[in-house]
Length: 637
Image (cartoon, rainbow, N blue to C red; front, side, top):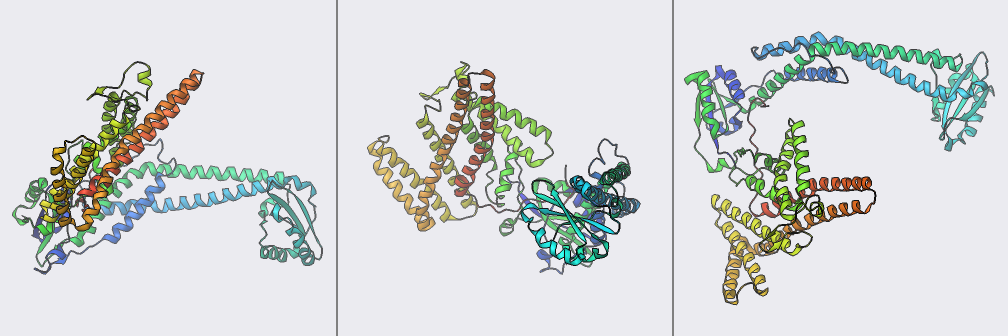
């Protein structure tokens, strides 16, 4: 259900505006509205000045950069974070000064270390590249001439373009006056290494020519040339060791800085982010020559607490006025879900779809009842229910700080209970395994043995009956919303739809000889009157919608069909395991197939249960599009 919201107006002396803002921020109960837009027509209200945001924003960017660097890799692994400081007694300006001071302390040192580390990483990657190339061309070393005044360059050419060598040779011959040599060999399946030896006096022209032809030329650094390749490889390995050692020394220095400053940086970033959010909201506050004005929405249950907080701090200097309800303004009120603990996880779906309008009926409690029911009816297996329950409890425990995942696992935990109950009714424990072992069997209720493989028609009738009830409940809520919004035509439209669908169902039962002939006149009158109401309330589109509503009801047959598919897969898993002949192999196959089925059982029933609510149920009464309650204040953990 939605908490009743009230509009309040807070007026206080302009000289105390900072304190008033801080108190409201700490209270964390007021959903701000733009007071300037709201009241400037009657009184010359000006927006509050937003100051210091650029300074705080710049500092936040710096702090987050430092935190990112100091949190990378192993800098925070197995170290004790020192320097945690209690900043609760500091003013905002003092917190800002503290952030600036720490930034200055570590900025130069950290930048120098990071720049040097980046330079070393580049050198390491370059040396690795040279090492690979030299290792590949080392078999050609015996063919290299030892000539003074000659230069050696390496070309890497794809085998598919080997013919380009015949094009290059004449040009090189002309440039070097035939003072060059080509030596080639396969590097790997795709590449050829070509070593080109030429007189140094033509080096510039040769390199320019190769560059102009987009030839991949590899030029080994001077310090690794004019020596045997094995010596060059040895030198590269030695240089790589020096680079790695220096990188390790830099990492250790960064780890020391992290140990000393990271916790303090995180605390300051958290406080300054809140401060930035607070002062960024100043544009919604108003001021006159002598007063400071705040307006917004607050849940009724928080009003007294908020007023008392301001009164304790400022006495009679601050006035809080609760505005009378205005139907037009209530349409703009934010929505605040205030549901019992077992309903709260299902608010996740409402926020994904879109929250209800403030004066709409909140369907979350109904979703919390029917979603687990539909889920359990589809899965309907004791073994699967137990696995889903245990899995969800473990994920919920280990990832309880991730809000959305905590909500999803809570939904699965709740839904696993009706899954186990329906599994008992259907006599299913990992498909027919429990029945095969003699542990349980399907219950007989209302003269029907609820074995899903044998009771397809009763299950179909049951699910269609659930669809009728669910859709009628949606139409009833549509009538409720229409009454609240004083829309008589919508009331008649919903009543007409219920009566028309009821008449069609009764006609079907009459032709199936399930309704006495004496009721025929009543059924006909009900249908005709209902169609009249439908046309009056919704026009011809209302009549066309009859088929849509009947389609919505028939859509609930998926509760039977998807559940039946799950049963079939479970039974197939058991039969395959039984026919394997080798016990261990059969058990492995059964576990794999049941695992797949359980994964599908957590996903597919959830999707279809949500769809039945959003498409079939919500379409009968729900508009949505409300504004979620977003209080101005410190984030609560």
